[in-house]
Each structure stands twice: as C-alpha cells, then as structure tokens.
Length: 446
Image (tube, rainbow, N blue to C red; front, side):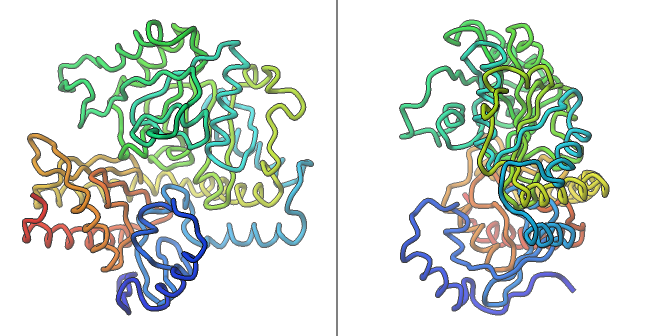
C-alpha cells in the first residue's frame, strides 16, 4: 500500500474553515504554494503530511530543503522535548551548544573550524558579509545572477533575479555576474565550446565592474531558488581562482546544499573549492530555526566582528535550538544520510528521465542527491518556459491527487527529506507522471 490517502475534496471543509480563520488577520506574503493550496496541516511523519481533513500527502517539498530528518523524527522530537523541560533561552554556554559547535566543526568543509550561531538564513548571510568586510578591510562584494541569500538589506543586494524589483534602494557595494546555468546559458553559448566564458566574465568583472577591491565572492555551490541549478565541472574552481587573484574571500552559501542534501556532506565537496566562510541553515536544525556562520580561525578573529557582542544574536545558539540542531547534525552524520540522498536521488532522476522520454514538455532533468531540478518548456528547441497558468495547474492537480511538490513554476524543484525511501519518492513521482500524462493528452501545455 502507498502512503497517499485522499478522503475529501482538497482543500477539505475543515481546511477551508481553518484557513479562513487565519486569513481574518494574516498579512499577505506567504509562500505561493501554501497560499494556493488552501490546506491546513495537522501532522507529519517522515515524508508525509496529513491535513486537518485526514488527507495524507507525499511531501517532496521538504520545507524547501529544511526538513532534513523528515517530519517528527523521534530523535529530533525527543531532543527538543527533553531540552524544553530544562533550559530554553539565553546566551550562556550550555551543554547542547558546546556539543553542537564541536560536532559541526568536525563535519565542516576543510579548514572551517569556527562557528557562530544565528536564528535565520538571512541573518547568517548578513553576519558573513560583515565578517568578510572586517577581515579584508574592504567593502565590495560579488554575487551571481539567479542567486538568493535572503531578504534583509545586505542579502537582498545580492538577489540575482526579479525578486529585487521594488525593494530599492538597496545597499551599495554589490556586483552581480552570470552564474553557469548551462541549460539556459546567460551568454547564449553551448557548453561544449564555451570555455567557461561566464567564469572569465566574472574574473573581469571583479576588476572592472566593482567600485573597489572585493571583500568577498558570495556563491551557492548549486543554486536553489533559480531552479536547483547545478554548475558544470570547472566553473566554481575558476571562480575561486579569480577570487584569490582579486584578494577576495570565498563565501559559500550552503543553506540548501549543506548537511548532505546533494549526496555529499557539502555542496562544495563536488567541486573541491575550499571557502573561507560558509553559511549554514535549513537542514541544520531540521525545522527548528537555527543557522550559522562557519569560518577559518584566522578569519573569525577579525575585529570588530570578533569583539564581545560583535557577532552575537539574542536567539542564536540558545539551548533549545542547539539541542534540536545537535540531534539533526548527529543523526545526519551517524547515519550518513548523504548516502541515502545519493541513492534515492539517483532513482528519482532516473525515473524523471524516463518521464522525459514520454512527455515532450520536460526540457531538462538534473540532480545531485536530493537536490533535483526539472525544466518545463513549450518547445525543447527554443526552451521557452511553460506558462505560469499551466505550471500552477500542474501544482494544483498534484495537490488534488496527494502530492506536494514545487511544480508551480517552469523550474520544478524537488528536495524531500534526506530520510525518504525510494518507494515513497517514486510514489510521489507517479502522481506527477499521471498529471503530466493528462496535460499531454489535453494539449494545454502548448
């Protein structure tokens, strides 16, 4: 028997009541997929969610990479419940925080042996930017088209998409250059003959486009919000070489790719690039709000970042958050969940490529572990994306049949829990396949 159980119309009557109650005073701006679903969730277990009407869904969204251990993992639940009885808040050292700092640094990318803790991803990115500027005495930073690092001011200056529109004025000092999205090459070139032209452009921009010497180059080892984009071999090493040549620090944003998501412990493990600073979050706490900045020891000592209260956060590293993250990190590490991510992710990509043979609007399938991207197009030759109305229809049809997946844009993103088993993952993809088959029969996608 499968995991999906659909008992009512979706959204069901109780979901409609709960959502209506929330909407009485909730400000707009929630994530689109949650707003469009109109569903109120009651419980979760592993890679399934059950709503207040008793409908159970396979969850391939995974909190957008947050839900590393799956919903309500016993070890995670026990750690939080036990810690909540003894100590929750405060900046003093606690046993969970002491254990957490050491556990993370033992697992960290080579050379990163200092950790400072925060409560959100964008907070950690802001701190990493401050640290890079303190360590170098410079102010300019370089980011990439398609990049997403948060929504606070400094991080928003590095937004590499239309999401930055109407947010200005944004802080000065940020230069953006193309990322190596080979399926939709920003330079209109073919990978076989491009010679990594985007990396060469970035090298030149570091010298000619910034308003001064660079403090940092901020990059995602693989871009999440842009559509789970995986750069080609050689791109990140070339960027790293250019950054060193410019005297800039390398800041790897491992929010999504860290802690086993891509089939290896870290996203940078695929390229061999060794950052000076890395930001971590999402799967770090498996749903509990916690993030961090990892840095080389010498970099972390830069002042005023390293002064007392210079890099602190009122919520960061509190005992409850530390206990939750410790359970997450130790479970990921001890169970080597990146190996499960690699194994199940490989099975998912293989199935998606079989689906690609059947459905002409699947333009590209790519994946590293449980970091999977699919491009939906009107025409494989032109790569024109499917219309927004069509992709939203795909999302709503998947939802109606018991699948939660980020299928509402032409850049489909799948990032389930690292604990998901192949049967559950493939059950979810069978729903997607059925929706695609219906779409193909109706010809609505053209």
